[in-house]
Length: 449
Image (tube, one colour):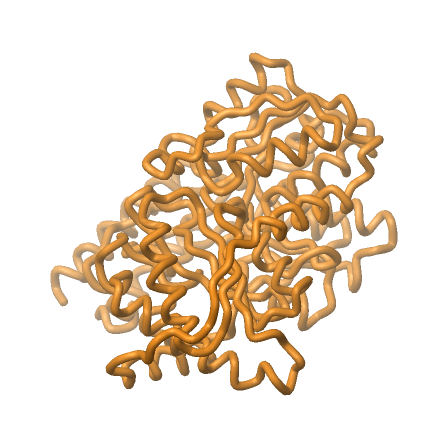
């Protein structure tokens, strides 16, 4: 089990451990020592692609990380401010040893993070993360840098061209869309891509402003975007998160369409085209039962994975499937990319909708979510749930009250110091009651512990 790496890399409040200068330098050095070991045999270039979002702490983290990477003997190509998936794509195109993104994704401005991508554009496996962590703890001091650093803005243009090539511009030309860029990594590139495809774009939260990244906007806060869609009479809208690897859509009436709506629409469209291998799609254990049952009723089975787009990616690769993702808006189209890409997903969903000739609201009405509540409890320490006497047994008793038509899912967040309790069922009032009781149960067991 990893100690510093969470579901999506190393993440913390910037300046607090492990996001301190010494640790970041060692992280860059030890990660590259591990990754460079196989670079020669694979014919990879000893260079690393790096990008960041707009957070104020980004440049200082970049400096420390670059020092560690160059100390390991690799060169650094800096894309500047650019979406996370742009790094995954650039790594593949340039045959680089790996990619690194400095971002805390959807988290508030004071957080930051570091996540690595393999030469195939995928997240690192946990076994490799554990090796890197062991090496960090055994490293007292890194050597002087020998690798070089250069800016590589041309890679951003390459990513833009890649995105535009995945859709038929003639289908999208003239379509009016609202884009919420979360004052993050998509602030410039997303509007440019949509405009260059001939769309009429209304943009919000499109500032290079790391002090306001995700603040009341973006994929976690879509109300302003959805209001603007209605006011502008747009065909639809899209809210990206801070590093633009996830997206939440809106129909023309301002109703939210999360990742489940996008995945279900894409899965059925692919099935109709005969392009859905095994008639399966991939989602996480947090997927709503309403979506799962809807897809099953239409001949699409679900592969459920732990939370995290890297687990979705692994399942897609293992089974050779064509679509998967998370409710949160991490969506993977393996025919184009091996990781979640908010801009790519928005374009694919928009093209799918335009091909059908339907309004976006038709997708909102295809199925209904089961009532659910998600409770997040801030914790000081992530104690194993099985170590809390009677807690899991108590959760099972509460779940039995849902009468086999619902569930309770409990897990610690992989990116924040929080315990998440998801309760889902047909009876909304009962769901709310059980959520409160589950929260009280956890707090009482923590006090006993």
